[in-house]
Image (cartoon, rainbow, N blue to C red; front, side):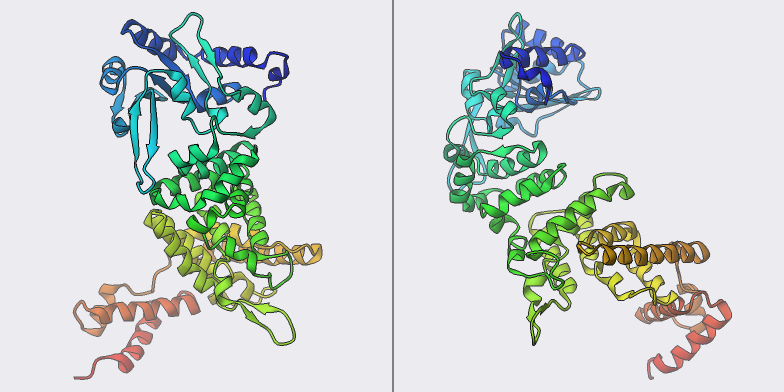
Length: 485
């Protein structure tokens, strides 16, 4: 939080901060001049105003205007690198000017029919009405640029809420969430991004209205979930959607983890363990080059198969045999429903499937063959698997944690050694498909694939064989598997 806001007149200070942040943005002044000369108003609004006050204004700028979309397009087209109109029906024209993206939206109000996924957009005549329809007070501030000097507008005490670090809605949260149920997800996302407290009235409204999220398209829910997960503190947002029941409709596998006791008794329940794994995975993300959606999704979903595989052990305790197999399938199904890309679905479900593989390593008894298969099965997700496996250790027993870390260190060392010796990332059988067909005297057919797999398995088990031994092994296999005539 900018320390200057603690002054006795925070709104004046906030206005100065926003104006100051725009001094190095000549594009903003130029756009304001264009709209003013055309007889229209233009105001910086929403998130950019909030971020300017917080001292972190980015290159995505949102504006609101009394100009209609066609008029906006005509005004901004000069000098724009590109213009797109995908949001035209909602009153939005977007453009790219160098590294800056702008979205300019006509004053509007939008209301959802209770059974519709799409808002009914009405254009308004004043900025006051436009700000009232915004999601939260901290996003309902504006800087009117076509006045001299630019006028700071804060009708709902957004600056005060920034100081208090609290999320409130401009009007009643019930009305806000009726108009756009996705705002319930946005509350969780902003809480996670800003580390803000959520007003009790919002929590109550989400709890009462959670089911209404079902009218929102999976794609919009997915996008908010991604922003939540990629925040600095996703636990805050996840806790909100779980505690209010919102997760029951968008990610029901996660709250169900509260019912399961971790078999190692590390935590009160698997849900808390999951949040801890997510946090520890985030701490290790430097190995992946920075914030990484795949590892965060995998950490969140890695144990979702436990509720379906829970079994009581005679004499006390529980087990979750094969929960990684069940969980992988469940993760794939959930991510498909949320319309994630096929690549993300494949990567996350593979990591869930593999996340227990290390625990078969014991204290280092794996053969080279087992290490090769570990590498092969992980494919290009090997580093992700390293991160997930290490994050999955949440024991409070320091000695045990150190032992597990040391054991995994040894596994990684063996992986590096084997990869250097055998180029395992490029591992192939000693004979390719053409050689297989020549040796067996056959044409392209499914049997070639079976022979190839057999030789690949040998390569994984025994390391490089050389062409002569591979040929002998292939002929032995063929004598047992060639089709009978």
